[in-house]
Image (cartoon, rainbow, N blue to C red; front, side, top):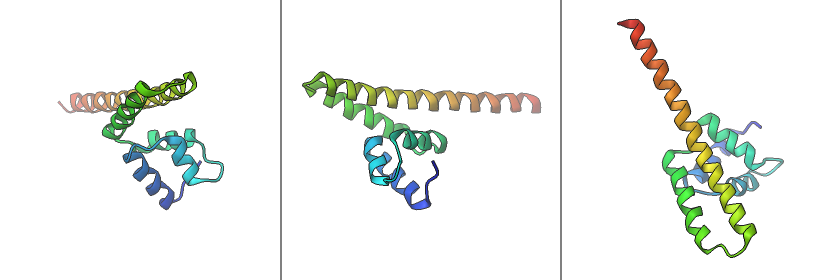
Length: 108
């Protein structure tokens, strides 16, 4: 899904506040899904590591007080989503570091 400049700004603002991706998708409207928001964040690097940490911390705090299995499962899915994002970022960063190291070795 492609987003307008205004939509991208709104997504990035809400992500930095630690909002849920499904809530952001509802705010964007249309047939936007949380997967579209997640893909945008992955592709653009819109979610900071700090923003992702905040999302995980918030969900873990809510997990303590979640009274139903359905609520705990939803929180677990959201935590998994954020952890997957961090993994993706770390993997991508490692690939970039390796590419730079390889280029530097060619220069020497």
